[in-house]
Image (cartoon, rainbow, N blue to C red; front, side, top):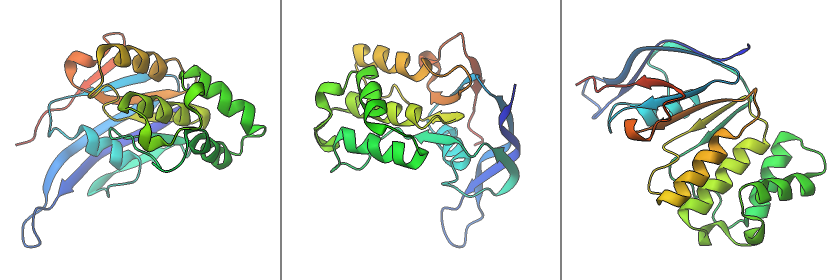
Length: 201
């Protein structure tokens, strides 16, 4: 199996004020992820789940430690409202363009059908429900053929039916794709590797 992510002794800090000492939210955290693995990062609010994914995605600087990762990475944040004035189709077209996919029309329509959004392809993203936006973001992550997909709280705020759909979509992936997702403990699939984060203070 290929290694798609290797984190060594990662520490990430927040600084509340200019004259205050930075406070760690993640400290000496290490993790290795192989292709095809599905790992749940669970913990209460404030334990650093979102911070971890944002740091892996390159959105938050590292205080100390190191992250080695595949270049083929997709990050799906909890608040999915990507490019609200684009249509669902145009948003996926943007993804296929970035990924260099040939014949994008058929690819886009296949993924829209996969997430049950083909009938909504010409709707602006801002008019879609949260569950629809979540499914669209998942389609975007999958069609880019990323080797590692990061899902931040993919089930948050969804009703039971939408949660079932999103669960299916998140994990019906290419067998070589690795998935790292965050959630509260009761939402984690017991068949996945589970890593528990705890508050440092």
